[in-house]
Image (cartoon, rainbow, N blue to C red; front, side, top):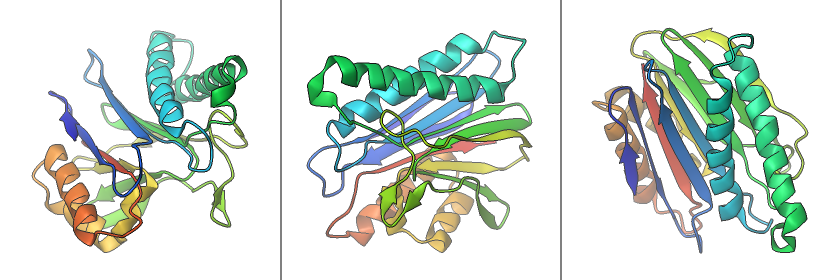
Amino acid sequence: MTASIKGPRAAGGQIQGKRRRQEDAFQIERYDAGDVLAIVADGLGGHPAGDVASREAVRELAMQFGRRRDDGKKTPRQWLEEATLATHEHLQEMTRTNRNLREMATTLIALYVRKAEFWAVSVGDSYLLLQRGERLVRLNELHSEGGGVTSCVGYNLARVDVADTLAVMPGDRFLLASDGIIALDDVEVSAVLREAADAEAAVKGLLAGVEHVALPTQDNATAVVVVA
């Protein structure tokens, strides 16, 4: 499945892989000024209702961020940080009122691009990468240890990383991805991001590459690409 938006060069898509259900979710929001918010969430395996957690997280974050965009007294960094904390509280409230959702959790990564600047927020072990010219750069640290996620939204929010007011260069290509993308190595990811004609072609190329590898235990894989 793929989806794209007009205007800002941004697109997203996902595959289910070998899993019983799709527990990734993504959303792309474009605002009147031409700025873009891209979000990816990956529901945690081993916890209940990963599909609910990821779907609710991207929806709630987009709503919470949208409410804060008109607050001229605060910065985009604060908008992202506050929206993430509110999303965590929303998921926790859901678990308090529905015992079937108790301990549900998700990773969450979001990128906000406005003119020549960007901000990002990251919780968990999803990826935020930047292809700048020939170089592929990881923009976030993974919150994981010993194969487990050490910070997540909805259950154990131990850490929220926020990138504050960084420069966007012409031609920059950002990738937000769930960890199912690791079927591809950095060289392969970089090649697709560099060579794709646009954001939608980059997403299709990445997901086609994952499917071509055909790992027997392939996880859900989601990719969102934003091109400056």
